[in-house]
Length: 285
Image 1 (cartoon, helix red, strand yellow):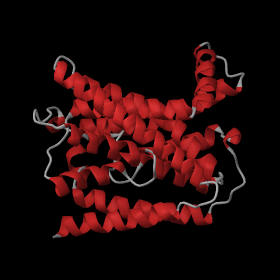
Image 2 (cartoon, rainbow, N blue to C red):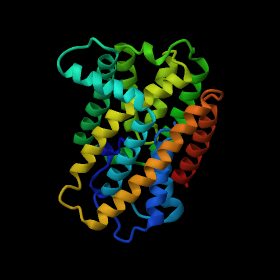
Image 3 (cartoon, helix red, strand yellow):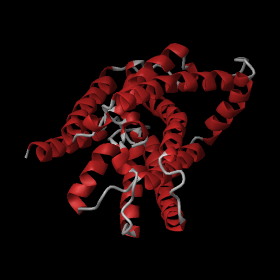
C-alpha cells in the first residue's frame, strides 16, 4: 500500500463520510500487519470491500496509515535509523566517510528507481490498469512463488554490514516492481536480497530500512491530494487510523523478525499462493 501514491488515481481522493471506527480499524490493521510482511497489502485491501461491502477509505486515511507504518519501522529499527540520520548530514556535505553516510547513500540509491518508475506510470496513465483485481491476483501468486525460489536457492553468507552500492541498486530496481499492486514491496526486496546471498534476518532488515524513504516519499505525494480539504473529522479519523496502523505494523515487524531466526519465508509463500488463488477466483468468476 505504501506505493499507492504512485498508482492511485483521483477516485481515492474522497472518503466516505459515514466511515466508522470499525472500518478505520480494519483498514489500518490490515495495512499495518501486511505492509512489512511479504504478503501484499494491496491484495488484502482489494479483498476488504469484497468481503465487507465497505467503500474506498480515501486519501486522508491512506496518509494516516502511512504515517503510522513509518513511525513503527523507525521505532523498531531505531538504532539503524540513528546511524543513517547522522550519516545523512555528512552525505549532504559531500562526505561518505562513515558507516552512516554510506548507509544513507545506499538507501537513497535504492529509492530512486521506485520514485522514477512511479512518476512515469502516473504520467503515462497506467495507474488504473494496474489496479485490476486480475493483475493483483497474478502478482500475488507469481511474486510469491519467486520469493520461494529465491529463499530456497539463495545462500546465507552475507549480512547487513556488507551492503554495497551494487546491491542497493539491484534491490532498488526490484523495489520498482512493487508498483504492480499485489507484488508486495517487502516481498520483492527480500526476494532480491535473498538471491544476493543475504541471511533471512538481514534481507528483512535491509528491506525494512529501504521502506523508510519510500514510505516518506509516498506519504508526501498522497498528502498533495488532500491539501486544503482537511477538517476536524478527517483529522480525528486520521489520528485513530495512524495509531491502529502503528500498533499493527510494530506487531508485524516484531513477529516476523523473531520468526526469521528459526523459520524460512515458506509460510508467507503458502499464504500468498492461497490469497492469489482466491483473488483470481473472484476476478474470473
